[in-house]
Length: 158
Length: 384
Image (tube, rainbow over all chains, first blue to last red):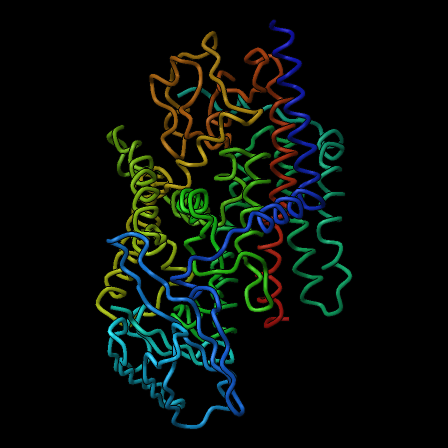
């Protein structure tokens, strides 16, 4: 038994050395691939949720995401819906849009923003949405921000 | 005090060089790309790092001491990582603060300290509660999958040894702890050893309950020297205050007073988490009862309070042992020894040390070495 334990221990030590040598050539790639294949996703409070629809306008487009709800009652971030106007460089100085967020054929919010100074006004047209007047980032669930080549507006939900 | 001179046998230069040869070849392989890159700065940085790491390994072979030499690497890593990281942040956005805009675009570099907090939400809801990106992108090469892959490989190879050979933060404390000749505070209540476990349990549960990386947001001392949320509100000002206070207290002041790695010993939840993987590691440290007097030199030398009188009696350090080898270096009677699990204590201590060191140093050259070389390249780019 002692001898078997010793053989196993020494085999483990040799295996450790082999793994150390294999790490940069195989292990990093394997592990990274496995994590990539695990279908994990960044929490929607950070990513803004999945894209629900894209609305084309002349010279720019609006990307409307699925609403992000609170999954736990005490969660600090959310609920909100994220809309991205892109490309930011081609937006007029003042943008005003009535947007049908839930796709029921009637507009849900009126979003007006200054695309240069990033000041936004949201007027709710449906009961589910909350009014917002914001310059820059107020919180993760109520903000206007320049993100890469777009302008992101997060509208708080009631 | 026993005579230390009697305890320092030396290996011959020739044999030490021969044992260093595999690490020299490995280092050449790891730095080969940088060594043939155009420009002087990458070549110089890679060359200096290579010589530094190989020389340290040679000294470990020659003197048969481990921690005495490996800590130079670890301190260099601890101090150069923030320099390189802050340098990169200023080049990218002119500030150390991370604005919400970059969090929304998934450009927050991922840090291994967040791993314990991510596990429950990832397992239950397949969601990652970190504002980064899963796979590397042009704007965020430090993606979650890449860092988790490095951590997994390191855990297989090093176990808790990550805290001695991989962690790019612990060296800061190690550096401050090395400054005073003697500790001003000697007596530390042993109950403090439970703190990292309490912090680990708290942050894992709170992060799962709030779906936010609680430790990163409220407790990480190293935010003070890497990247912190832009101070735009009272809340972020409080967060910043906590980061700076914890950094100055646990990473600078207490190591100076105690000569211990106090952040690792009293706070770090990742260290506690990593302790679990000491169970799966092939190597550990043992205390040979037949040789131990006990003189408490090992207890005094341990940077993380992992050796207690009870641990000495049981013949092995606590599971928080990070396999730095400080106790083995300190023991004048060769009672503290490197050990391969399953084998007899003291039967092949030097072989166990060599096998552990080859694995650990191979990882250190590849991971820490690339960080050191990266920062040196930036510095040499300005100076040369």
